[in-house]
Image (cartoon, rainbow, N blue to C red; front, side, top):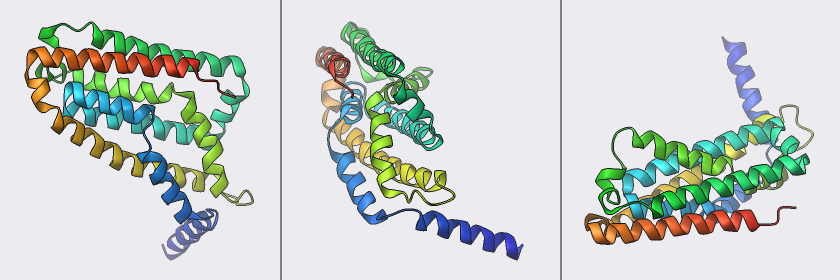
Length: 225
């Protein structure tokens, strides 16, 4: 039992030694997380249009997608995808098309389905979670970020190179989750009155749909080198 414990301690030390400038990474990650991007705008739109519960579910979905990206990047799967220009372009347009689809769906929602009570109950919770996850998974910019940013803080000579990578990715996702939850709760709180009024709820839903369409078109037009 003692040998197992010592072995785990040594492994933990090796992982930490394999991470360079961890404090700088954490600070940089926090600054990047609070900078408005596609994920934050998506969560903001969901929270404003459908309330706190929908916003939180979107946060959990997006963070799940980010964790999957972390594992894929650590295993080298993201690098393989990045090496194929055609596959990467397909992914980019699939993500853009998915955002446009969600936006059009919200834009065409009628008054009876524009309020929080109609859009965040029952089986729709799972749907909101999955939509958030796929929004992140189909965003090729996330792949580029993990492949370009995380390796700068990993010692390339360490034997267990994957483990420091996973720790860095998990740290980034954890700080991002905390920030996104704050955004979701704050946006839902200030928009509660709008969503309780059927007429204004419809307007908010359509504005949010327009925002998703904009994000999708921007992704489609983004040049990814």
